[in-house]
Image 1 (cartoon, rainbow, N blue to C red):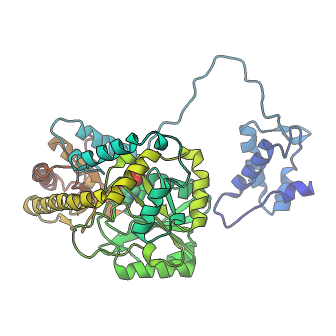
Image 2: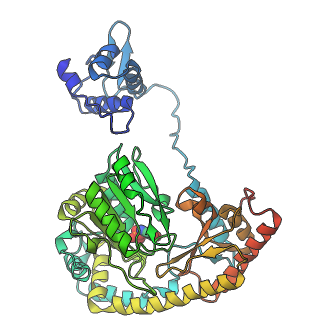
Image 3: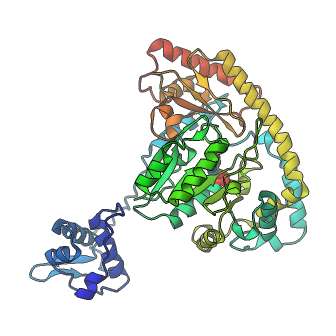
Length: 489
Ligand SMILES: Cc1ncc(COP(=O)(O)O)c(C=O)c1O
């Protein structure tokens, strides 16, 4: 009995309920055969006393194990481990009850998609470019040239990614190839970081509003601590106290052309953030898919390039600069991190597509990527300026926005008490879509904010779409201040 009790460890600082800690550890031991069928578990009172927990903690843990069919309470015998497979109860087959998704985000996106299905709808809602902006011919040439060389790129490649691309990216970013891992999207990288580096009970700090809040990437049991963002990016004032109080493992930031706010973390704040990370031993995940799309103003160094201590896990992607269809993104991090993630990626996607990585590599080395980027920046700049011009011309007083120095998105704030969600319902009638701020996190800023993408609508569509939106804003302000819950779409 003594040895058995020794095998259960209680961690009061983890934030995971104690009964669940006991249950999960017993469950693992039963399923792995450490506690074989017929084993008598200790009486609840005894186990509670030895572990220094309440009796109800053990009662609840045993009850949950019983509900899963792993143990059974027998009169006069206490709680006994059952054989893992029991014959199914006879009777008609009941269909599987899959849980239906009722996420708030799904409802928002369903509303947006309903608008976009209408003929003539204009979209400021997309997270991608207009099809005309993709370098279709350059991609076709690169694919053709690579396939003409035989089938070498059509098999599975190394888990770390296509070697030549890792070298080319190292040369471009000033890193070392062994610090670079190629993955099938920053999204995949974020998922793996969360699965591998975080455990239930850990805390993470996340900007709010932030694209990352919309993804649902944080595993259950991880505490998410929001930190505000202003015109200079993530607020570093008070961050030290936050780190001291919650001891987070990771901080997630989009320092350059943040999605959805479009803001950039200032240089002094970049330095402050790195100092605080070192002081409190907090890892930083720098998500930077838009960095290459600077339109005006000074281009700031990445956090990664300012970080000699290895605190930053840097992510970038060809999704926003070339095309998301390639599914090629990369991580730059200390070798201990990239090797761990590479070793585990097999469970997710085995390997990212090598041919696509070779296409990105070819475009990078040949200079085609840089030529494409130069043209793309000009196109995007024209669209951004068209959007700002149209907003200035059409929006009623009280609507405000910040002009982003790059990226895909502009954030507009509606006058109180107008709500973005209500505006979306009204905009549906006009045939214009955007993403309401609440999609990116809770808080007043989100409720009154709307994200407008300027890389998807055409130059001709932008003023028309803004006029429709401004009309909807005016109507709501006149009617009831836009505070109603909306009629649905
Ligand atoms: C900030 C941010 N990170 C990551 C992603 C996902 O990029 P990828 O296509 O590389 O998975 C996006 C896409 O919108 C994004 O805006």
